[in-house]
Amino acid sequence: MNFKRSISLLIAFFALCAPAHASRTMDIGLQDDFVFLGDSSATFTREAAMVRAKELGVTKLRANMIWSRVLASGQANQRSKPSRVRYELGDFDFLVALAKQHDMRLEFTLTGPAPRWATADRRGPSTRGPSAKEYARFASFVAQRYRGDVERYSIWNEPNWHSWLSPARTAAKQYRALYRGAYSAIKRADSRAQVSFGELAPQARPGAAYAPLRFMRDVLCVDTRWRKRSGCGTVRADAVSLHPYDYRHSPTYKKIPADDVTIGTVSRLTNALTRLRRAKALSTSKGREPAVHLTEFAYFASGSLAFPRSTRARYITQAFELARKNPKVSELLYFGLLQNPEVQWNTGLLRPDGSPDASFTSLKAWVERQRRAGLLRPGA
Image (cartoon, rainbow, N blue to C red; front, side, top):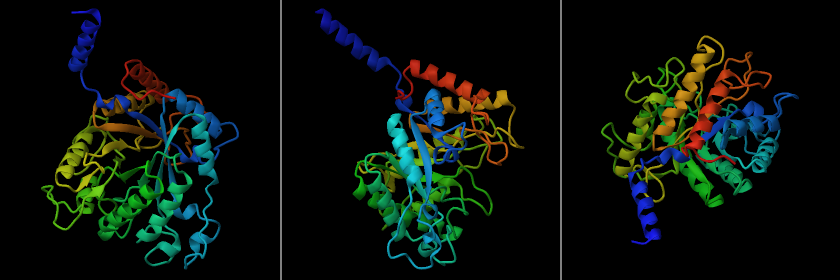
């Protein structure tokens, strides 16, 4: 046996024996709209934030584009649709340019509140009964504008949370219409752009939110035994996005209701996607299971839900380790870069002056170890 053939056989042997790490290309995501969509201070600019993000190993940035807030002045409050709808997207244009400069990929969540003229009761900009037709036009406009520059679009934010999409009793039906219309519109405008289903909240809250798996079944016409109703077509998605928060427990905590999905129970979502594909209720355009993107996750840095610094740092790193070990998870995104103790939602990894907190340092060290082992998507 010649030398070259021996080497080839050895390489093939080790490739077969090596464990499969489908999540070796997992993205480290980050979102902080206060910072990235408008300089938070003169001393901590968007450029400074991008440098910190790259230092942390971030490969993808997410931003929420709120429909009624990106319309030209006054148009969101008009009762009748303007004769010429105009959008002001300067902050997003800046973010796109900055991401290009730093070889960072982007995902935009296109969400409500909708402008007054595109709501059911037309009482004002709201999340009540948004027009699926007008939303698809909005999605098409954005996808055309950022063709080739934005990798992925998510359709609405936390549609299973009643304040994001109402009335609650029809939210699933509304979301199906919003999603299908926007999916088609985006694909026509930019065929290479990915479209994500969900951005689902993780847990049921009486009077406030439906459990994510229950909501998915309702949207996709599937019963509790994962059987699809006849006459209900297959929904296409490149990915399913979920926010696996669990502020009160460690990442390994699993004692939650069966239709909830937190960071410790992500396998419930991946198992559900297998069933939904088999039921021909949800799949990619090629008939495969959509990827899983965990696009909001954090622990609080202050307030009644905050853990001690060392515990918080350990829990955040542990959560990323859990996600990386799941071969179906393609991304885990941390929500919050810069701390602001004056706001309730204070989850940042950097202190208010921009210096690293223990959580930043711990996560950075973990990312570096994973990169050296070839278990994460290479950074730019």
